Length: 77
Image: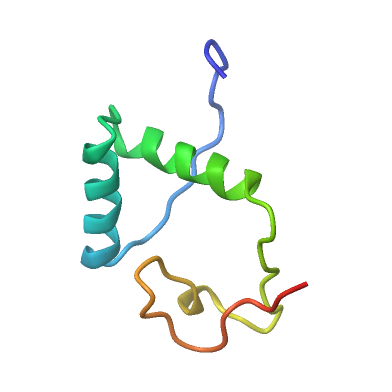
């Protein structure tokens, strides 16, 4: 996507543990910024095969990156 103007802003809230996991992943791959790391993780996640669809009754707080999420996880489709 070089040369593409990014016109949309996305704000997310992370726990200290989630932010630490992101930074550890980013630094181990020499990513230039948190934003670039998040874009790369999104690209990889969206390209993955066999992903599960989220239960429509789940709330934002039910999703996390460190496995300590509450509620039901995604359902396999």
